[in-house]
Image 1 (tube, rainbow, N blue to C red):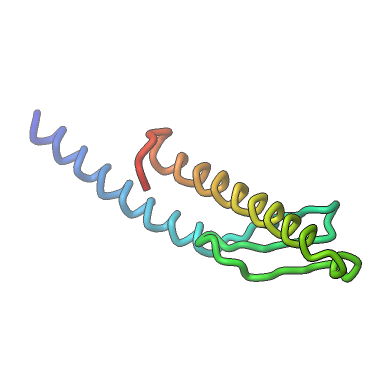
Image 2 (image 1 turned 90 degrees about the vertical axis):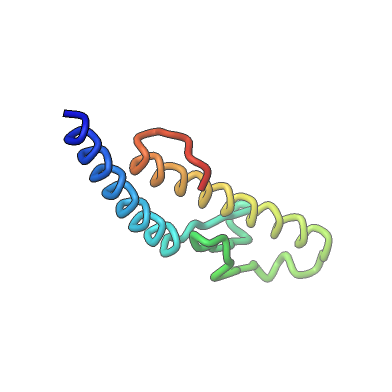
Length: 101
C-alpha cells in the first residue's frame, strides 16, 4: 500500500511541476498596464517585469521632476499588478501553498 501511495504522490508531484512550468510561461507572456495622472502616463510591463511600452501625454513634458514621479508611480502600479497576477496564477497550481518562486 505504501508503494502505491508513493507512486501516486510522485505522479502528482510530476504533474504539479508540469503545470508550474506551463503557468510560468503564461506569466512571461502576460502584460499589465500601470497608469498615473489619470491615464496621462501609461506603462505596460510583461510578466518578466520588462517595460514593453510607455505612453506619455505631451502636456507633461514641461516639468521634469513631476514627470519622473509620475513615471515611477505608473511603473510601480504595473509592477504591483504583475506581481498580484503571478501570485494568483501560481496559487492555482500550488493549491495555495506559499512556495518560494
